[in-house]
Length: 306
Image (cartoon, rainbow, N blue to C red; front, side, top):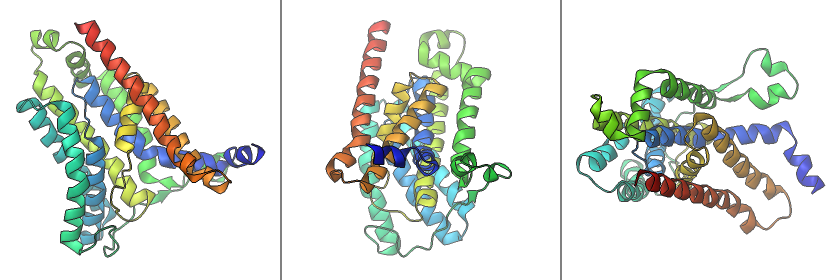
């Protein structure tokens, strides 16, 4: 126990926790926006995976990390818009549509990677670019604090700013009011002239943008390549984080940090003599608990509406 505390209570562990929280926070913010509009995005896992591949491909062919990031965001936007079309326009079941998208991404990314490069597992032959780390002036020189908050990938700081931005949009703008009203009572929203389908299209598209940035971080910040299934359940964990956050930006952010700490802890425990099987299940046990909370909340919401 003493050895575990010696490892956890260090700036390196805190730095690692923030780092692994980044893609979860992006995806959870996307889940929050779509859920507040009453259009849950179950396809976050697949969107992140396709965006991760897009970031590698676009950056490799253009030798520009910025274009790689924009490519990942574009793919996230287009994929979420496609899901919105099927679920909102064609009335496909939102759960089945999201699951289908996840399965499609899992196989489709491998096919595209093999078609472009001949690689089957990882993008080893692509000279992809990496987004830069940012060292914050003044703060970087402060003992402990500088070691924790400075030196992260640029997308980590964008994720933090995004959480603030999402709160502002949802709580302080007309678009946010429409998103919340559509999610809480679509009939009341219709009665005052709100285009419910348009708002849900926008919410799902925005969720795709955030998931796209989360995917870009995986392949252009967390590591510098794409590998098969590298989203590794983070889309599902993001849904759990949003559910545990009870539909609020602050709650969703704190829940994402909690899951990030669990993930960082599983990585840290590998340094100790603890069975690998136990270590690997820690983030997923936390996810099951979060998804259980999500299911309970959704059941209660249906009962309240009924």
